[in-house]
Figure (cartoon, rainbow, N blue to C red):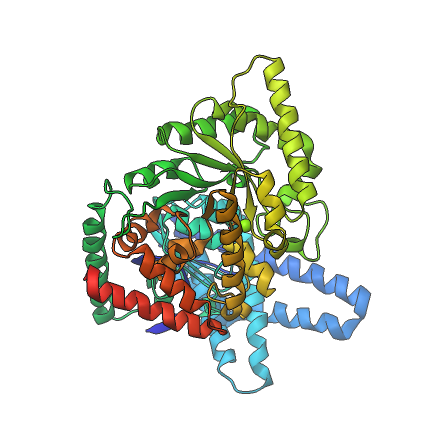
Length: 579
Ligand code: PEP
Ligand code: MG
């Protein structure tokens, strides 16, 4: 049994079979071949060995020409390993006698060899890398590409991968993917956000572990604690089964809150809206008792499609969300592409610092036809319900004015063609850069609402990449610098009488609910799965007590101190009222 600690990013506990995608993304499930197919499978294995040998020879020749014989010798060593009779015999007998699928035989056998080298405490241990190289090459010749691999998942599995991009995550089939764990990834990454939206339990940032697991082995994934257990024993499996059962009972209890309003004990009504990435999630928000959709991340229309969405694609998606939440507000955020939400097809050249690069509203303002198409669709949807538009990552007032000008222009165009829309559609901006907070007094005069994006605000304030596990400790919503920016934004918005909401992941964690209400928030936009718990906390606290908690937290000068204090406050609340 091997217990691994990572970063918990999407709650839930699940027990299942591993599907391993290593850094090149191969799927290596434990599969067996029919006796009648053994000869065909052996031939396939031989082919892959021959193709791999050819690849190594090609590399050897190229390196010899560039760097000389000494370096080419590395590849001769690879060839010798590949053709080693002991290895070849083991692979063939695994297929012939044990009826292992060739991919599984390759993965199991070569990893066992690599482990022997890794355990040697001297420079020879580096040889393990050579063996992994040969394994990858053999698997590449046996299997197809990564995207096809993910798309081909057709049985329940827990995906264990080096990394998953947000669009790969968005394309996971929820019917079969019970959970996933990755070696890379940070707490605020969009991969994490999508996992939570899809309600797939997930743990990221574990560090290297894929060499310790083979496809088909049992795995426990605990998305609440950020724990992954490889080859668990029976006792541990039983314990986790009980825990999962208990969580289901709690969730059922919380279901009863569905139709009750989110009101504090002293009568303050709090709007709890849902964050969605896909139209289908609107239904999930509704079934958990939301007050509308506070953030629709429309860039996922792009990330899940092979072609650029048309106006009709946009419109259909928006109409579906509006119709799923009748009479409720639906905040549609314009494309927030860029940074880690990249379309590889449209990426013209590598950006050195993509999160400081051409992303979000900057990209939309640069690609006006795409922006106008989206605005037309949003405006058309505004004729069907309470649609509001939200611009992401605004960092200067000029950007906001330009975006509004494009919107006004599109409105004029629709009016000329007699197409219905709400000319008074509320326009809001995300507050997710320190610049936006510093200039909030100017911005507030030009918007109908603001939505605070703490995922990015934390990143830009603390200069910490939200997707980097190496600095995950520093990525902290409790940091006093972040709290001060929240206070300033909320104070200025309140004074101007402009509604403010918070839609970063922090609003979905009950640890922060009292703090956020105390800072003056009356609207929280959270992932669907968090709605019941947040509502339960709201209904158990008074706005006056929350204010005292926020005031106290703001006197502290270290994130650790704030965190400990908020934890205590939540513990006290749970003990007093909810238990
Ligand atoms: C945020 O930055 O807090 C936010 C809600 O936007 P996203 O996570 O999509 O960047
Ligand atoms: Mg953001």
